[in-house]
Length: 310
Image 1 (spheres, helix red, strand yellow):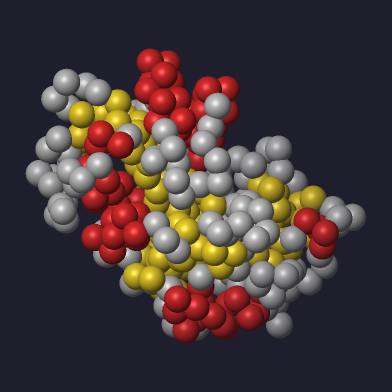
Image 2 (tube, one colour):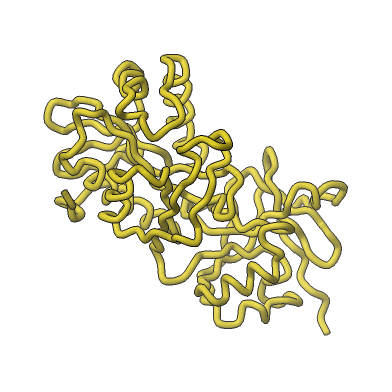
C-alpha cells in the first residue's frame, strides 16, 4: 500500500513528527519491552543474521536515542496515534561501516509483525523524508539483503532507485552468510549536493577555480568536534574532541562533484562525509584520512589562511 505524504505532517517538540495515523518521537523507557519483543521475533529478524537478546535490544535503543543528541537525527520510536501502541522505529541514521558509498545518511525502519501490511512504514517514511529535506540533506541511501522484498518495496514507494552497480557485500555480516549480499537504493533530495569547503577551494585561494559553476550558499561553520590540520599548502579537516572549522557551503552538480572527488583524492586521501553544521543543517565535507593527519599541527582558529596576493 503506497501512502502519499499524508495529511501532511507537523514538526514540534524535540523533533517529533506526526502523520494522520502515527507519532514519530524520541524514545521512552516504556518502549524497551515491546522493542525487545520485536527484536526477538524470528519473523521480524528473518533478514538479519540473528535476533537480539533483551540486553542487546536495550543497548540498541540507547544508541538510537543518543543519536538525536549527537547528530540531530535518529531513528524515531513510532507509536499509533489511536491507542498509543509502540510499533517499532523509522528514521535516519549514519551508515559508517566500510563500503564504497559510506559514510552516508540512511533511512531505515523496523516494525512489529502486527503492524505489517498497513502502510505504516511508507507513511512514516514520507514524514522522515520531509524532515531530511528540512535538514537540507542532499541524499539518502537505504540497503537490505537481496531477498528482503518487503523492505525493497517500501524503498520504491518512497521514490528510491535501486543502484545496481552499488550492490555490495555487507562487512558486518559473516563471509559466506546468505544474507551478506545487499542491494543499495538511493534518493537525491536536492538538485545539487551541498559541499562544505574550508581550504584551498575557498574564494581567493589557489584552487578556487575548481569550483567554477558551483552555487555559493554563504559562510558556514561545523558543529563542535572537528579541527583543521596544517599540511603546508592546504589544510585537512579531521574529527576531534572539540573545535570548530569555518568555511563556506556551495551547491554542486553531479559532474562537479565527480571532479571534486578526483581533486580531493576521495576516498583514499580525503573522504567525502556528511556532517552537521552549526545551523543544524547538513552538508558534505572532505575529511582527511587519520593516517595522513598524524604529525601535522592543529590550526587553532579553525580558519584557513588566505592565499598570499599575486
